[in-house]
Every structure is written in structure tokens, then in C-alpha cells.
Figure 1 (cartoon, rainbow, N blue to C red):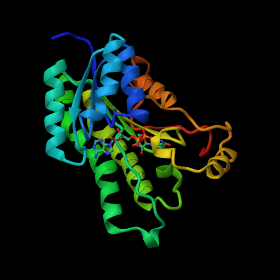
Figure 2 (figure 1 turned 30 degrees about the vertical axis):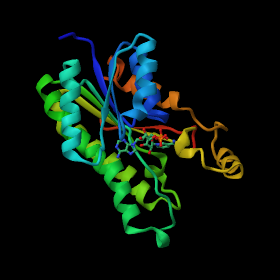
Figure 3 (figure 1 turned 60 degrees about the vertical axis):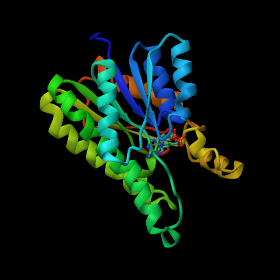
Figure 4 (figure 1 turned 180 degrees about the vertical axis):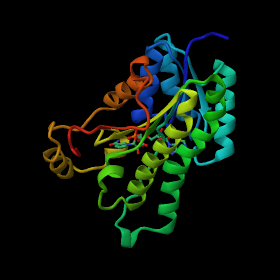
Length: 245
Ligand code: NAD
């Protein structure tokens, strides 16, 4: 097996996950792109291959623990190991608390928070055996400061920060680091529904005066996977233009 490093990225079909997968690939890292449907991954996988990178597509529902375990086993089989896991897949189902349905609570917790737990469970035996690994969990500014209309999402994203700290402590003795990134508002499909007035109001609250890009989150992921970040664990890196300090 080659010593080339390999990464597993969930929710890689679009937005932030897609930018992460492409940046890994352009830095010579073999990347497994996972998403709910394999067809949704066609474009990103072809783009990576056309630019000389190595990518493998896997269908995965992150909320299903056994699905995640088989996807990681397939990825390790294909690329020899899993050096980096990025728990990026996420969804929103926003509503004010009084109107929030039980199902909207459960689904958002299952995908964002339990999905992250499932991913960590799946890669940990591989990384422990290798005595190295980097796990990056994509949380949110909503998990740090709360956000009206996002009781489910902010609870899930805050939960990911606690999960990050605990797993960082548990896995440190095996030289595995676990960190979270908390993006602010980033231009992706997730935020494309916001109307112009809401966007303008938002920008007025962001000290850097603009919405962020998926590439800016991807660069932070790449840094956390680099040798330069070897002494960073259990942290939540805010990439939010100063929206929350
Ligand atoms: P997006 O909606 O554009 O993409 C989400 C990706 O997750 C898609 O590929 C989708 O197919 C995948 N996904 C959803 N449910 C899944 C499941 N059950 N199993 C596997 N894959 C699933 O969103 P995005 O803006 O790129 O967000 C990526 C991550 O960043 C999410 O965790 C999101 O909560 C977080 N985030 C985004 C923003 C933002 O402003 N866009 C801000 C803070 C945090």
C-alpha cells in the first residue's frame, strides 16, 4: 500500500464538503467523498480525477451507524487507511421553538450530532491501530452563540463541541487529534434561501463585512490536518469574520 495520506469527507457533494474534498485532492491526499446519493457525487469526483487527484465515491447516510462503519471499511480498503475524517454532513430544519416539530428536532440531532459520533466510532479503531489521525468536526457559530429559530441545530452543533473535547481527551494518548471548526455564514446552498434583506442585515453584524466562502473553511481543515497543527486538539476554531468573538 502507498503511504499517500487519505481523507474521508462526509457531505462532499456540494458546498463546504465539496471544497474540502477538492482541496485535499489538490494537495495530493486521496479522498473518499461520501453523501446520501452516489449520483450527487459524480461531479465532484470527476472534477478531482480530471485535475489529477484520486477520489472514491461512497453512498452514506451518516445517521446510520452500520452504514458509516461499512463506508469507512470500504474507504480503508480502497486507500489503505483513513488518516483524516471530516464530519461535515449537516442539515437545518429551522423553526421557532413553539412551532418546531418533534421530528425536526430528531432528524437534525440524528444527522448533525449522532452522525458525527458515528463517524468517530467508525474511524477510531483504524486510527488507534496506526497511532495517528486527525478528526475535524464541522460545527457552527450557532452552536457557540445560539440563534433564534435553530433550537435543534444549535443544540446539535454545541453537542459536537462537547463531543470534540471528550474524544480529544480520550484519543490524545494515541496521537489522534480531534478539533471542531465553527463557521459563521458561508455562501452555500444551505444559506442560499436567505433573502437579500436578511443577507444585508447579517453582513452588517459581521465585522469583516462579508459572508465567508467554502474555500476558507476548507483551508482551515487542511491546516488542522497538517504537521503544523500537530499540537492542537480539543479546540473549536471559529471562522466567522468576527461575527462571534
Ligand atoms: P449543504 O447543504 O450545501 O451541504 C450539505 C451536505 O451534507 C450535502 O452534501 C448533503 O448531501 C450532505 N448530507 C446531508 N445529510 C446527510 C446525511 N444524512 N448523510 C450524508 N450526507 C448528508 O451545506 P453546507 O453549507 O456545505 O454545510 C456543510 C456543513 O457546514 C454542515 O454541517 C453545516 O451545518 C455546516 N455549517 C454551514 C454554514 C453555512 O453558512 N453554510 C455555517 C455553519 C456551519
